[in-house]
Length: 301
Image (tube, rainbow, N blue to C red; front, side):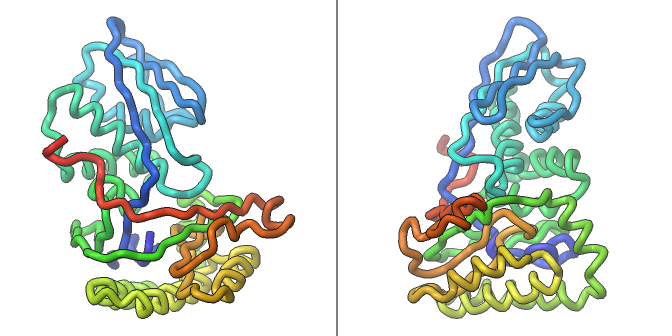
């Protein structure tokens, strides 16, 4: 998420992007009705076609599979390979749902255009979370930078490049829990309207290739996120320290907040974070990423 957190749940647009971290799934059909899921990071799980239940740590995978339950005549082995940890708050739940939906559509020889993948994966994510804007689903499916709105659905590609870095703060709070907290503390819709206005200005800044203006809007956005109560002393300290570096243009929380990653724009020295024992102990990590133009699938694949 570049801009629009929380407000996107209430009808505002957001700006989302895909980054160069991938999740891949490999499906091998079986001769029986067993479904065997294997992940180096998360372990293994087995069930049968007629007994699919949403169980950790594969709830999003199983939710994606369950949408095809009536169309499965045999089971399969599903190997999940990920280039990043599910603990970093990079939309791994949405990404794996997108990947599983896609591989099942391919295997079952179903229509597999990006819009269908998006809708099926969004249904799977919402089945687990009971809410969600789908911004992370859209980023995984369509790739690149997009202005995104969930209802009514809107997706507008934005051609821009960003000097993007992420800093994982060392912990995460589940999105559903953060959203519930924000819902209790937000006094009116005015703050969401302000975020929505910043998003539209951010879109124009990106379209005009004005990165300085976009970065300043990110810092303004962060002030509104703090007002929503999704920042904390640890996050504030990391933001302050990052912005004090020469060459840094702007910074904000990326995602629901109270953990996950902060986004910084500008020239961040490689491996600058963590740079002291306290940050290392807290689990702070610097992620030097690039925006990925490619999504999950294209007709040339």
